[in-house]
Length: 354
Image (cartoon, rainbow, N blue to C red; front, side):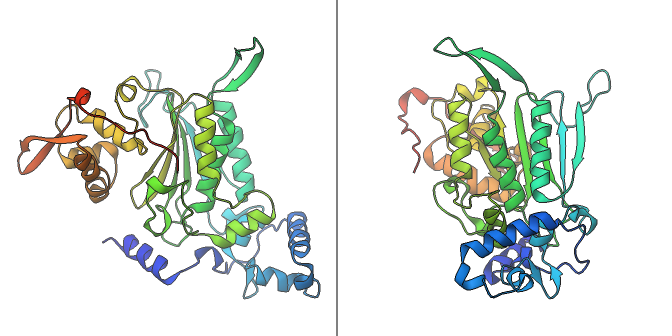
């Protein structure tokens, strides 16, 4: 295990709350107006409990402050510039002229837009949404009733939920607080990447169906009081519903243990559409397409850019058990795996929401 994998295991087992750790640098440009709004909302929620407490006592009870200093959660929400203490806790946003990251176009263009987004958590959310609106297509269509309607390339509500999830559920530990969230807009998809996999090893396939434990419960509760987040585990179901309403593929969620990636696609790829069964984890579709030519487990992991152990046990093994992948010889010491071709002889059950 790597040092980070050991930390993640211990943090979950011991219930460490990184968002509650005090920030010794103290408050940086505190947003007094927002703090007053928060305190008023908290007091109104439990009048009998908080009416005789000072503001400082309430902030300590709610873990906004600790030991005379702001907590990390408090700083992220109530500071106008938390990056003064944590320069890496921002968001980088780029628009790519193509479908591959880092490829330079003929005229030398690598990014059509490239910004670093900073500020409080809620300010970063607003700025990231502005970047998305600026860099995705917008068109006018005629609906079934003959009415004109404006539509974005991606449903903005789904995009907001994906960004909010990344900001709220990322790993804020010392191991990753130098790593910004990434927003990458390609021609055919949008990717949102945050550090830290799903908390506690919760299965990706169950996201949106069951309620996992929260990595940053203090941060989530603060945002709930400010009505920025509902804290009702509705984010992923909302993303799925909005993408379906827009006639787009379901969002994809990939977790390699070090980072969590959400992918929103603006079209159905012809290769994926040709698969007879729609899988809940879209990584399965990518593997099935890639393995039309026999591949080894390592080649598959490298192609996905994901951890070998996770791909082998979490993705490939279930596909072999289901008959989606079959053995097709060997390459050196490794077995070659190939997508099964006799699809007409198989029956598939539709994926249903739980």
